[in-house]
Length: 170
Image (cartoon, rainbow, N blue to C red; front, top):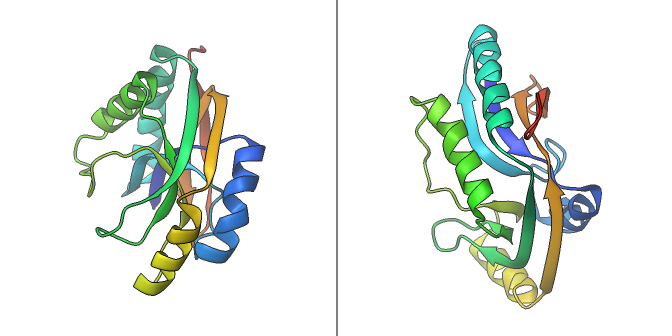
């Protein structure tokens, strides 16, 4: 079974991201806009339950923080992903590091760059056109993040919440 750890932003930020995702992200129907804290990994349900206990402790050890998005950016030329750039504040970076330390055998394919994907799997020409039009978009948004989620993937490929963890709470 596949699991992952994410932050879901506020409805207003999700609505903004979805205004692009419905056109440019083939995963639009599978998962809401999110910031990935830990990429998808395989685990048994028993392993996931133990991991959830560790995540509960991680949540208690970390505090709510301000999530800031400042612009639209891209991972080109590594891949044709367009995203909302999330500022790498210390609280977010520490939360990511602590979560990933819990599942040490999980190796990340890429360095952690906090972001919310708005377009992916675009052809080179489509990426160039879309990113060219969006990169000048001024976008400043701030919101409080007070929770993160352990997700699991259903048989149809969509993702759903396994457990939610509130930061700084028992």
